[in-house]
Image 1 (cartoon, helix red, strand yellow):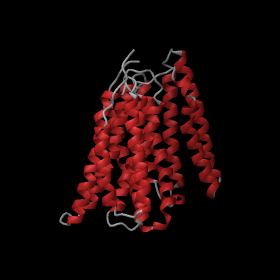
Image 2: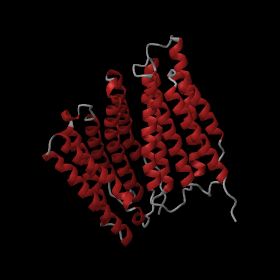
Image 3: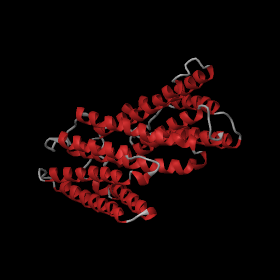
Image 4: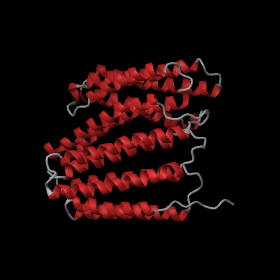
Length: 371
């Protein structure tokens, strides 16, 4: 496969998701107004953020494989950006009000993806690529038609059918991962795209801190909270990006599924952490719930990050490195269990996460010697 760098078009496309991520995260922070519905609102948040991520992932994977073949990719991308904006504007905890525009946005995104695959199929001579394109477009079309039939239902059946169709759309490439190996991705390009998308997610944590500081820059307790939180965020960022470029084997032949889908969990973990930052300052929710959100999001980030590094290394990771990673992960779980039982203010949780992140940064990836 011919290697290519991230294009300006792809970076322009990402701008829509800066707003999309911010919008969905803002909805999650409204739990302060409805503390009894914490888990319900969190669940609705996930139902919104997964289709948003899939819109980005679908276009990213297509451009990774076929951008150099597709004629005039900017036309498709611009139109898709409009549908992403429409879908994002439809994110609402009262989903009945915006169901139709959400569905229209999602259908528009997926139809364009399918059309792009058909457009390049005519220009490809490789039978393996043609087979994969036909496979993907068949599955995507089936899932899209299924989601669209939700129009004919109301209440729970409507949303079950809608999201079941989206679920099938997402898992079908996973089920056919062995077939997709016949058309390997450009790992270098994919890793760069995932790194940039994760950076957008980290941007949401900075937005959270600025919002907390707004109008309270002279408040000592607020300043202390923001300083501790920013140190934690910086250490989390460092633990990911300090290893991303030199650990991942960018020459490997892979379908890219593990890299791509792990990025969803990175998105969820960082945006949940950003929401916890909002909720942890002048908390309305019980400390235990806020602390649970902090620790769960951190543990998800920690686990996903090391999963990416362990399964995509240049060389096989040494067992002692894996043991260190597991050991620190177990400590996070034990700490989380203790913090859930013994209620403490969120700033103390952040302080401990700073220590844990510091230890995480000290973990040096070592590789087994080649025989």
